Amino acid sequence: MSPEDWEALRLRAVELMERAYAPYSRFRVGVAGLVDDGRVVGGCNVENAAYGVTLCAECGMVSELHATGGGRLTAVFCVGGDGRALMPCGRCRQLLWENGGPECLLMTPEGVLPMSAVLPQAFGAEHLRHAEG
Image (cartoon, rainbow, N blue to C red; front, side):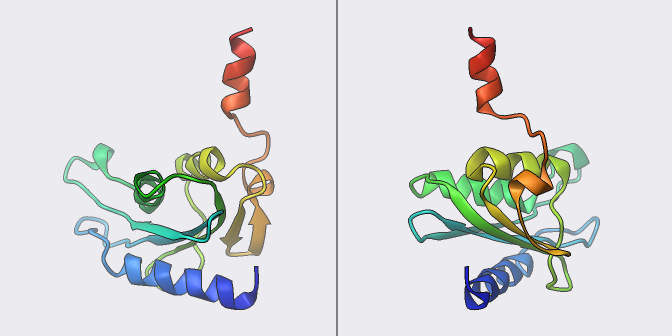
């Protein structure tokens, strides 16, 4: 991906971060992802007074991915309130793995990394197929 593509994803993530519903933590997050068919999908975090049902931004992005036709994520940019790259939490890394696989690129605070580096030895669908025999 070109630097311009990454900047476009960052700007979309910032736009979504500004729409986040975070009245409790005040920690707003936005994310944008490039899909293998060229679409851009995204999401923002949505908090809840019952903290356990809070939705991470990546949950919204993956929901939009499937609601708009599915496909595979190829590149993802997640931002915090300062508009800079934010590393997704472990749960969200698993969501990215499921929907983008080991080759999906993630902008991290240390630069672009493939999911295979961000979530080494990841659990995936192949483990479930192996369990079936």
